[in-house]
Each structure stands twice: as structure tokens, then as C-alpha cells.
Length: 379
Image (cartoon, rainbow, N blue to C red):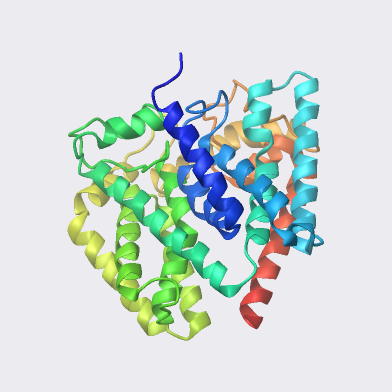
């Protein structure tokens, strides 16, 4: 049976495609701003087995390929390694599928993620040709991320209908029950870690704009309001790793632009504001970290989550990876593991493709970092 919203979505897709066709930079904004924000939405909302973000990515890539003259330019060094990484990952996923270690759904959902990464990079890099078009895309990034952060804050305060709406488009078990505080917010994602990770780059962008007094993207007041909203959402995720990376990235940006004093002011305001506004969330999370996990034998001076991660690595993943260190086990963790999330990206790559995939991943991302540093030094 056709869902009531399908005609509306179809009309929206036609309008968006027409707009991107007439203005290719809009395809870059869709890929860089909308797709990350919508990537947490559940599969099958529009097409069986697919996410809205994946459909938007393919649509934008096709428009850029057909419409943008710069789509035919040679691949950069980073793009070449991204392509190699995507091909290797897809090949290993098919290999594991052939030997029966994983299912087709898992192969498409997880094994092809590097292919999506390459397509995202390719589309975004070819959709824009000028500084003004880059600013146009960045404007979308700031505003789209601020909207998603607002949803997360409304989720924390348990505003009527927000949690139900998130469950409808993301899935169940995305936050504590209504009225149970402090809620560890997830925004439009199934878990808080994904929401925080998605916000990391936009947060750094906003801080850089403020430190440089750069009004070319948006008025500084708007950027400041968006930054405050996003910082609040990240802090309400109560994910120490993400929060730490945000502060670390801010300091790096401040050193780059020579405004370390201003950066420390922002960091101090964020810490003070978070402590005053969301002290219940942090107090509860801190108390949780001091409770020993019953699944972890013995006691530990480490926080509970850190001790538990080390335990599952030692118990499950290190012995598992020793059994197939070259090509790994595939996209799905074996049923024998206690906790199916590896909690480490490189352990994930080892599991999916062994040393073979991990080496290509390291080379790929090292090339991207080197390119980013070169761009920062000459830009």
C-alpha cells in the first residue's frame, strides 16, 4: 500500500532534481549538509533497504555527472586512494558474501560504505567551482546542523511529540522513556555517538568563522547562535570522546588562525554553560562511570565504559582477528561476541577486511589529512 507521504516526497524529489540541474552547487550542499544530517534515518522509509541519505547522494551524483563540466576532470591523489579503498572494500565484501560468512543485506548496508564515501567526496568536490559556491555550501552545513541540534535539545526536554517523531523516522530505543532524565540525546540518529560525530566538523567550521570574524558565510550572530545550539546538543549526548575531540579541534583551529585567547573563551563558556544548564545529565553519566560493570571481572580504576571496551577487545575481538588476520570475517560480527559494536574504527576494518583493508584505509586517510594540511597552508 502506498504511504500517504510518498506523492509529497516524489514531488519534492522532482523539485530538488530540477533545482540541482539548474544550479549544480546545490548538489554539493545536499551531499555535504543534508545527507550527513539525514544519514541516521531508518532504511525503507522511501525505498526498500535504502536510506533517504543514500538516495539523495545518488541523485546528486547523477546530476553533477550529467550537468557539471568539471565532472570530467582527472582524479586527485586523495580521490584515487578513496577509489582504491572503495574497490578493495567492495571486493572483500563480495568475497565474504560468496563464502557465506555474511548476508546480502549486510553486504549492501555495511560493506559498501567506502563506496558511499568515495561517491560523497567525488560529488562534493565537483559540484562547486568558486569560493562563493563553497560559501553557499557551508551556509547549508551550518543551518542544517543547527536544525538537527535543535531537535536533539527538544528531545532532551521531552517536548511532546519529538521522541515519537524520532522513533517513527529512526527506529525504537533511541532515548530513555519520556520523563526519564537525563536523556542521552541522539537527535536524528539511533545512537548519541553518531549524532556527536556528525556535528564535529560543522562545529569546527563555526568556531573558525567566529574566530576569524568571517561574515561571508552567515552573519556572526547567526553563526554564534548555531554554535551554541550545536555545542548544547553535543554536550547532551554525554559522549566523552566526541566532547574531547570538539575541544581539541577548537584549539587546533585557534592555533591556526592565531586566536587562542578567543578559543579558550569559547571553551570556558561552553564548559560553564554546560555545567549550569545540563548538570543533571553529566552528574548521572559520571555516576554511571563509577559503577563496576558486572560483565567485567575484577575492579578497575578506569571509567566503566573504557574498562568494558578493553575487556571485550581482549575477550572477543583480538582472539577473533588472530584467526583471520589477512582478510577478516566480513561485515557482521560473529554471534560468539559479547558486544557487536567494536568501539574502534580500526578494529572494525580489521574485522571486515583484515590487514588488507586496514592498510588501504590508513593510506587513504593519511592522504586526505596531508591534502587538508596542504590546503590550509596555502589557502
